[in-house]
Amino acid sequence: MELNSPQYKILIVDDDPAVCQLISRFFSYNNYEIKAAADARTARELFQYFNPDLAILDVNLPDESGFNLCKEIRATGTLVLMLTCMTDTNYVLEGFEQGADDYLTKPFNLEILKAKIAALLKRSSGKELSLNTPNNSFTIKGLTINPNRCEVTLNDKVLPLTTLEFELLYFLATHPNRVWERSDLISAVWGNNREVGVERKVDVHIGQIRKKINDLHGQIIKTVRGKGYLFEHSETD
Image 1 (cartoon, rainbow, N blue to C red):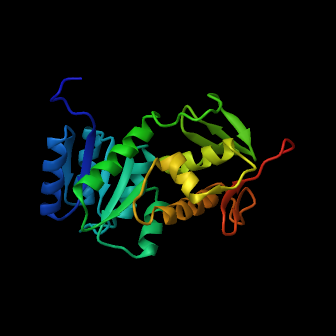
Image 2 (cartoon, rainbow, N blue to C red; image 1 turned 180 degrees about the vertical axis):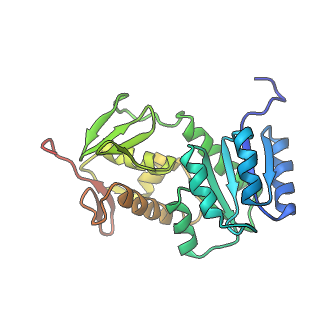
């Protein structure tokens, strides 16, 4: 790859021109190709021809909620990082429910934003999915897990898991019948991430996985009180 050629393409959707300009300059300098939109309508138009690898979305857009746009973009397979001033837990959960791969609140540190985006893109490329597990699809607890496509199906229906959700489920399913502490899961899926609150993110993502695989009562992914999580599996399942 040429030194000056863009490595990845990022679409920024934020109605604050100062934020767009700040992120655009920083990531352009770091060898990313950037496009910016101030509203959902413009973002959709740009998305069609720009075909970004990742979108950075604000929640409060002038024409509609960024959550709607998040859901649409994730349906195409493009990664989404929500960037917003809303810190309420309900907003964070809504972002993950609509498919967001990560969530960062304003004010933010550009280096942290860069690290989050780099981690998402690296995981998405499959470079970090290097567990000692099968390369082909396998079925466990009625779920068919395809590590090559990063895809999970239930009754022939593809489940809308985000990249992180897939990796968490994949790790637990391929290492069953053992209690994994949150710190273990962080090391296995996030890497050595010391970000404040990341252990709470494990709980959020587990909750979203349970919803999507129809495990609302925790019969597949069990919570071991005071310990962590366990994927229960026997040969008869």
